[in-house]
Every structure is written in structure tokens, then in C-alpha cells.
Amino acid sequence: MSWTEERIHTLKTMWEGGQTASQIAEALGGVSRNAVIGKAHRLGLQSRPSPVVAKEAVAKAEAKVEAMAETKPPAPAAPPPPPTPIATAPSQPPASTVVTHVSEPKPITITTDLTPRQPLEGQPVLRSVGPGGFVRQSPGEQQPPITPAPPRRLVPARPSPEIAGKTSLLDLSDKVCKWPLGHPGEPDFHFCGDKVNPGFPYCVAHCGHAYQAQLPRRDRRAPPIPFGGPRVR
Image: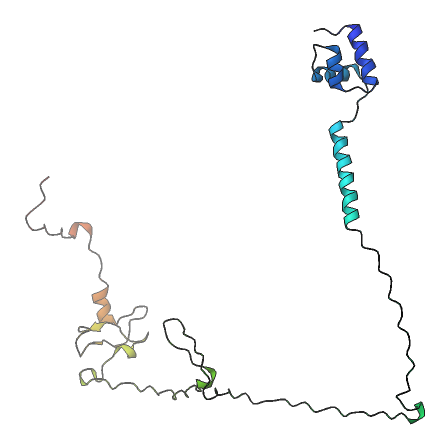
């Protein structure tokens, strides 16, 4: 379907008259609503507000009015009429004979006894069970902590007769030789105890045992062959 001059004129007339795009498409025939809207947009016709948006705005305005009507505070009720005064005889003496009695403030008693109260006879005692199944004591059953015993004075043990006068482990220092003599499991195990060689932990005699010069490679003895001879691959 092509847009002829007659159909374009009809579109402009009905568009300016306020007709909807669906009504214009039905009057022209052979076109859809979207085609009418697109042609009007290309012709530069004045756009119109969407009816959907207008309906939503109207609905929101009506809902707002209804909410304001519901939340409007009720009109205040008329105050009750004042009571009719009843003539009664004066119950107080004249102002010249009124006597004011001032009561003294009562003293406040503060209890400073913090001793736990014992349960009354016949009253059940509530106990709680802690983790592990032991029963916790109530405040009245708790006892003060036991006074700790005074610290004991450590007395060095007497050396055995086997190492009497010899250097033991407790006698070692940077000035005595630390070369062990004997086996640690034997009762006479002790250390050399002689004056150390300066710069070494042992004396001169024991430094000769501890530090030996390495032989040249040609003078070194080959390690022994393991039992059975060399392994055959």
C-alpha cells in the first residue's frame, strides 16, 4: 500500500482532529496502527500524550485523594459542659488560722552485709549442672580459697662419690674444657674441666682429637668394599 496525497491529507485531518491511531488506520484501510504513527512522525505532525500515561496519572491522583481522606484526623468532639457548682460549707479554717505541718524526712538504711543468705528450712535448693556432669555449688556453699603453702627452698643435691671433685654438667662454663669422659649412663660420667684453648671449647689436648688436618686426596684411603663385592648390573 502506497501513501497517496489523498490518504496523507486524510491522515493529517484526522490526526489534527484528535482521532487515535487505531481509528485512523481503520478509516484508511490496509494499514496498521504502527504504520500510521510512523507516517505521522515522518510528516512532523504534533505529538500527543500517551493515553496510558494519562490514565496512570489520573489513577495516582485518585489514590492520593483517597489516602488523604482516610488519614484525615476526625473532628474534635465538643467539650463537655462544665459541672454545676454545688454550694458547700467551707471545710478549711480562715487563712489567718491555717497551720502547716512539715514532716521530717525518714532516714534511709543501707545494708552492707554481703554474707550470702542461707536457704530456709524446707525450701528446695536449686542447683545447676555444669559441663561434664558436675554439680555447681550455690553461693552459700562456696568456701574461701586455701592459703598457698610457702615456696620451698631448692637445695642442690649432693654429688655421688663417683664424681666427687670432677666437673659435672652444672659446672660447665666458657673457661673449662667440655670434652665428655665416659658414657652418659654411667655414674662416673663427667667432663674434662681443664683450661680451654683460646677460641675453642676444648683444652689443647682434646683439640688435637677434635680437630685433625685433612689428608691430601692422593693419600686418602678408599672406603672398604661392601660385603659380597661390587654390585653387578
